[in-house]
Image: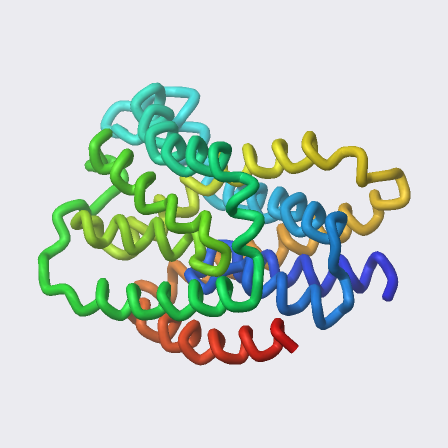
Length: 264
């Protein structure tokens, strides 16, 4: 396959799944194996094309990000306060990811990914079955304590297949954050965490890359950006009408197939 086709297929998978609670890692492992695109360079590529998805969120929520470098009357998720909230959410998974980097790499295997998909699906069903009322109805009412607690839940995403988006949204919901607000915050919180992961991966694996890789990475990043735009807009619109249950059942159906395929 050409760099264009690899970039199209894998970029589409990354863009469509990065911000949905279905695990982009699990899907990229499966599709990469189908395309026989595996190895250390493939893993770097999968992380680097996240940058396209990150840019999609920055573009869609550009007003929110502009608010982080300015202060406007009536907007509390802004300026230093907004940056502090995002920092607190990023801190737990960032520190734990650095400390357990090598151990986490050992979890990239069929059984681990399949179990993670299933466990995440069950957790989503349990979270949706709760009866407590939502207490936080907007980003402006998030507190530093809530931001840090959501960051602790986000650590679950270090288990390949669990999904950072799922961990963040479920954590927010358990803490009383409205589902759509938790999803929106998961998008914003992804930017610093995924940016750091991308930069760290590039620095750590720069010896694997060459100029010949530029077209592949460029196409992958571009298609990741385009499909992430569609996924984020569609997901927010969908959460206004349905719960997380369809995504949970999808994960439970995918888990045995993922194990069977990856093990084979």
